[in-house]
Image (cartoon, rainbow, N blue to C red):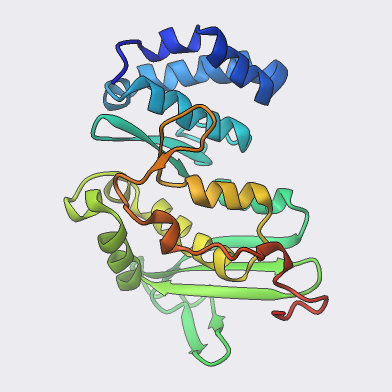
Length: 253
């Protein structure tokens, strides 16, 4: 671990130059906000400062704010390192920036709202006025492309929980982001799965999916370590030809 603090590293010329290269005139406000975020999070302030800075560089390169109140991206303490995470609002924003999507959303599904599902076609019928209780039974994500192709994915709560137990060591120990904000992590998981399997993924989105849940070890973002989730990218495979998956009518080629 570096003996320098986050503030010390932010004052170094190579670090300042990196943020200025990415953010131009917004670099100073971004790094000032980063210093406040670290100062306000006791566990994050104890993490290796270079992993904090490098994770922040990824967020900056994706133009996603790290403010925890906004829910686009986050730096999450894991042991002595900071883990970069893109949240569900960040995934939606990156998808919308690609210019390929007409609409997109993700929501919790309450008891009574799922009317039927067709496992052959992957189609679901929801009635959002049929809520019977405050019990969340699952999560659904949806998108529609400009060319008319649309897709919905639904995960019941038990499937989300099984995924969290399999891919997050901290959840298995009853700690971490999954425990602190299960709803947001569930929404992220479902929409990330939907986009990875059926969406048109820009280079920016592929970078976000690859870096998600990684400890970033260098300023260039090339050295990624999945400490909480040893096979994070494998959890949601990004097709090599993701941007060319759909034909003009929205069907898979």
